[in-house]
Image 1 (cartoon, rainbow, N blue to C red):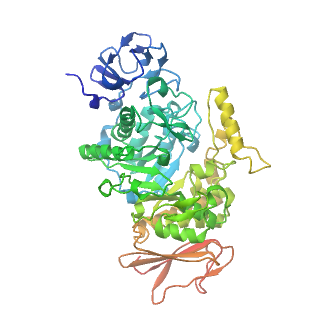
Image 2 (cartoon, rainbow, N blue to C red; image 1 turned 30 degrees about the horizontal axis):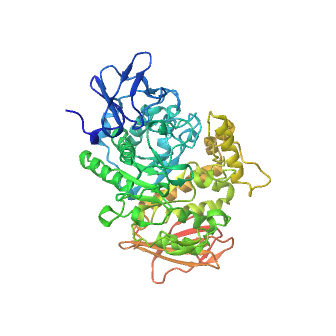
Length: 599
């Protein structure tokens, strides 16, 4: 009996001594698989544009391409490995043969306990591979990290790229260590008790090595996006495109043991189907979890302030587990004295920071002058559904010179900014290197092979910053030095000031973990007050009989603060040793945290 169309999954699947080959190519009249240095086998046409073949002539390690009726030989859109890069042959792999057997005992940690560390595989260590990350796991564990977030690893052109130009969603970047290296890293993380979040991109596909249009309607001209035609999630042929990406989600969880996915810029996913693609992904993941007993999370990057995306399906939402919330970052940066240009222009500082603490969304029905419209809705979703940060790859790398917080702010303000993140009722995230005050920039870098594309990227980067930094020129994204200068300088930790910053981060993370009032993510157990003129803000958080009071001073002068009456309080944390408790004066750019005797 023939396999049902609904059961077909894209790519090559090895089972015992046979290979099941599935290709979706509705534009083709004939299709064949060309096995390098062996033979060419014709595929059989199936319904709705599928081509399939079961054969014992394609083996693990064989390299192959598909040949369509136009004579072109193209890599597999669902390739699991591209050993020679985006233009080369696809290679047959058996993911099950490399999956660690002892990983079955691992259970994902609760989302509410995630303390996230975002990193770029090639820039994190001089090794530039998954193996290099694994060698730093004990360091991350000692820091207090409970989850790492890896920027996209889908195969991209060359060896230098942020990862958002990936063109093979199923293939792990060859220069990072490929699928074997990623599996080994996930296993190593789990043995250390660290969860793994993988950044994936479903809103667009990069330009170089993008052969999707040769096979079928993977894109639609119905919608315009910053990257051109939108991925086809609701136009003719969209059933198979949706299946392609849903199967990709399941592969990361099922075959690689990834604990959570961070879906890039889902506001750029255009889908007006009766059932949104994100909801369909949620349902597929729920079905997988019911079968395996494993827990997996879907986290989205999202800037529409629309709670439907993170509401449960039972509440007519799309069921995403959490979202990045840039508004907290924007309000925090403006409060700390950052420039109010671009997307920061809508944020007035401490008043909006207080609102971000209290309401999650700053714009929850307010008029936005930057967007020129009333924007957002109110949300009562729990705190663990929001990921906050003082910096990330975007907000560092999208600056022309890639300056980190360590360059833009004083040491005392850096410490205050991160403490502001850690005392929030949300999930905290660090960007690699910030914990010790890394001074190297994180710049935008690529390694394309197409001269016209290289020129276009260079000119685009220059034009983006025409109105800024007139004395400087945007670093060349294609230059190897741009990438090399973005790598972490681990030798910084030989210097006392960087050691001190690292110790500060460790202490602050431990405080959050060990203080129930700071670790409960309950937005209902939070009171906020602020003084705009003094640039101070107070958070009162509690859990049971434990009460914690956090006083933050974003001004450059001493400011008074008032302790609650009739409370027996002790100082449990301070960012500046000079703070004088006796006169209730808070040092400039500092935080002090009190708790009652139940700590």
